[in-house]
Length: 117
Image (cartoon, rainbow, N blue to C red; front, side, top):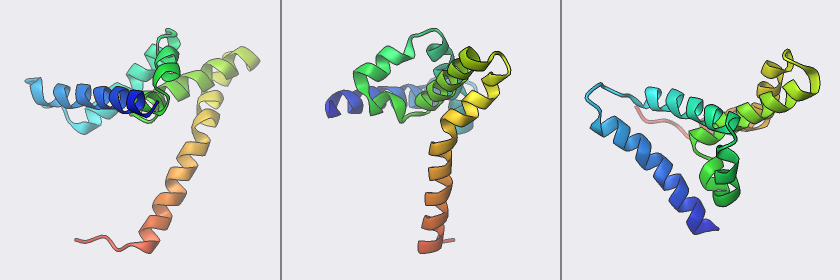
C-alpha cells in the first residue's frame, strides 16, 4: 500500500511540476493550487476520484486534488440530506477537522521554533 500511495502521490506532484516547467505562460504554485483543488472537485463530482482514493489511499487524499475531493464529497452528501442550501455547509463541515488541525499545529510550530529572516 505504501508503494501505491508513493507512486500516485508522486505522479500527481510530477504533473504539477511539469505544468509549471513546460508551459509558456508563467504558471505559479498558486495556479497549481487552485487548478488541482478544482480538478479534485470535478473528478470527484464525476465519480472518477473515489476509485483512485480506494486504490492509493493517502497518495490520493493528501495532495491538493484530495482536498478538492473532500470538499466535493461533503457538499454532495449534505445536498442529498438537506437540499441545495447544504452545499456550502457540507463542504465546510467536511474540511473543518483538517483545516483546524493545520491552524493549530502551524501555530504550535510557530511558538516552538523561530523563523530565520
